[in-house]
Image (cartoon, rainbow, N blue to C red; front, side, top):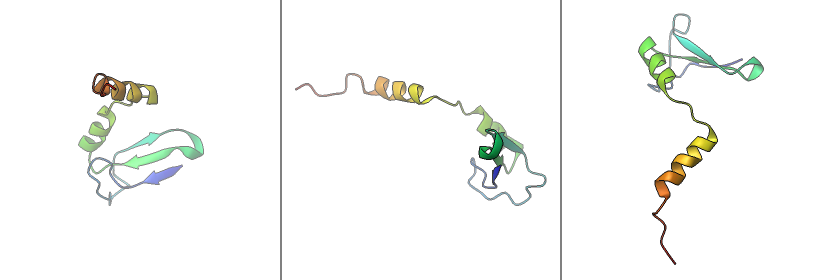
Length: 71
C-alpha cells in the first residue's frame, strides 16, 4: 500500500499521521492511504463526486454543442 501525507484538500503536509483521519482508495499493492489534516477535509474529499471517463467526455461534449463554427 502506498501512502500520502499531503492533504488533497488543503495541500498541506499532515504532521501527525498517527492521529489523522484517512481514507484508503483501491485495494492490494496499488491501494493508496490518504491522510487529512481534519475530519472536515476528509468529509469534503468524500463529498467529491467521482465520474467515469465517459461521463467526463459527455460533460465536455454538452458544453461544446453548438459552439463550433460552420464552414
